[in-house]
Amino acid sequence: MIALLSASAAFAQIAPECADVAAGDAPGWYVDDQHQQDFLLNFFALATTFSPIHAPIPDEPGHGDVSLELSLIPPLSCDRRLVLSRTKTEETNKAPILPRPQGHFTFPEIGRFRLYGGAGYIPPITVFGTRNVIASGEVGFGWESEGGLQLAGRYHWTLMKTIAEIAGPFDPENDPVVLDFFSGSTFGLDLMAGLRIKSVIPYVSLGVTDASTFFYIGDDAVVSNNLTPYIGPVASLGAQGSIQRLVFAGELYAAPNTFDASLGHLYTARVRAGVTF
Image 1: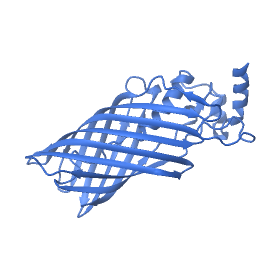
Image 2: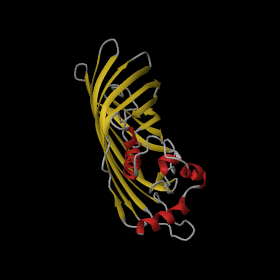
Image 3: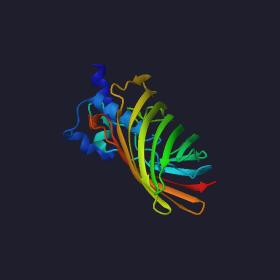
Image 4: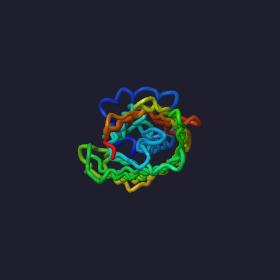
């Protein structure tokens, strides 16, 4: 009875643009509510990973940079937003872009080997109806040949939390606004290769990333468990360039989840621009 009442109330929260989709058949990849829930939790953890967006060695030895990253958060389709047996749409498409200030520093070289570190941080400022705190970091160790070939390995991590009305009320006309809490953490290892071609360094990165999440739904005080947190391959294809003290980079980033894409995957683009010192 409780389940039926919940489902009945949830029909009031089908977004108008998703009404036809909700009334139709589920797509072939749809499994059940648990898969849908795990996908959503994994998706937003992956959207905040600290991918390279830089060459295997980000700066010249003894120098660093400060820059602003802009990461696209792809909007989710109605089929991906439907929960509770496809009777309710979640308010997931709030923030289309993740802006993250960041900086890097490459230590003086040891022979042809170079150690570097980086950090990114988003303070708790409300943007697009969400209040986020995101802290990221990386350490890497690279090598560059006389011909400009760069090889490196890097370890990265991100801790993030979001406070917003994500799940949404069952009855938007009468229920009060109640904030939800989402927390995610990711860490991973990447191997990178690039080639210096004058002032541009195209690069490729392949690695493995792990994601863990926690989601507290404020409307009914329920913790949504992620039974299949993401652990799988990630890849980046991009380029870094410079003009005098200006540095810029862009990459295509993928977390394809080759094991079961219905449990979470991400394909996006990320760019950054800044100055060196």
